[in-house]
Length: 471
Ligand code: BYC
Image (cartoon, rainbow, N blue to C red; front, side, top):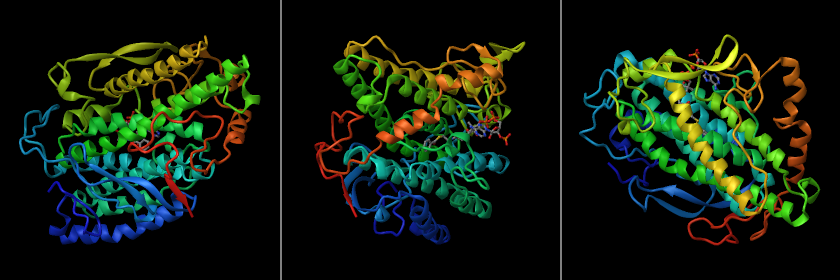
């Protein structure tokens, strides 16, 4: 079961060959996926790319590297190994054997969770489709494409579940995943952040830091699911996701590092004229991507999430390490709220506050990135620091959706927000400036002037390796 079969049209470790109906259904979805990839995937023509392909689900040697034309990438279906003794770790079914099939009473909710997760994967490929044309180096270009093919594989992961466990409705949802498009007026992607543009590489690094990190946390909670195939799928996706996070973390590191170098070298904060991105602009991009990613966790209180938890569909981050009864019927939690119109907190049942619980885990993780970027500034001898804006800043979902707040958490009247928002969020001028720096560097071993080179190459290769052959 665990060794993927690469002789198959669809590489997989789920024994697809033994289930002809399912195999035929997925094989008829495959050309639709490929035509979606051709029309909505990366636009820069390439001959081949140095890509990682999953070949096993276990241990160190789970992937192999090699130059492959992207369209020939072996998108496959890989689930982590099954633990035959696995038990449900939380909710009303705690202690029962994990489910190998979808219980009828939870069909609609599970399908909805899988569709929402599945919808984000192709959305991000669509958002990033034009970035190849302005890549700062071949190393970065290769990382972009690696992220893209793996998001494509994550779509396959969700489509497999829809086809295998949700019958005709599941197959219809799988088609819809290819028909909705990021930013489309008629049929947009489901969640807000996935309809925003990723027009430049600073946005890409911020997206892979902040928005992919939401993916890490949501996949972490679905990995706890009582529905074992979903759990095993997410477990393997998280392995691939670590690279996406590395691209974001080190991408922002390298932007901050380069800006700091020029600030020190030219003895000024006003470095736009030197062809690097000023710290206040980096902060505005951070503010934007962080706040739209906070929205992805849903409302501070949600009966949906309480039901998902009680039913065993979606757990908490690191559920099994939590020291409580894993049912939470009598527990409470403080959540962010508007109290008498003021930004404050209120106590609610722990179950309805689970989106807040997950968002807090995420925020703590994001703090790690900011500390890291501030260390770069500190080591350069600079007094400036980056920060995470307040949770009420620029929110469109949840308790603070109806108000405006500054990055330090003061509630603002609408007219003051309108007047001052350009200090905190990227303005058209900022975006035009950042875009003006995005001149492609597609030459081996060279890099754009606004970003520092990486400390390490990919898979032990040097920075000046021929990571991508353009067409
Ligand atoms: N935009 O009850 P509430 C990733 C809707 S990223 C628009 O608080 P709930 C990736 C909500 O659907 C991870 N609508 O929500 C990253 C609900 O609608 P209905 C993706 C939103 O259900 C980078 C209503 O508002 N995975 O993998 O508790 C690259 C009330 O909301 C938004 C998942 O999200 C929004 N931002 O929580 C590639 C996991 N937020 O029912 C990939 C699956 C909420 O009233 N999804 N709404 O029509 C879930 O767990 C939950 O559905 C959510 C929302 C956390 C998204």
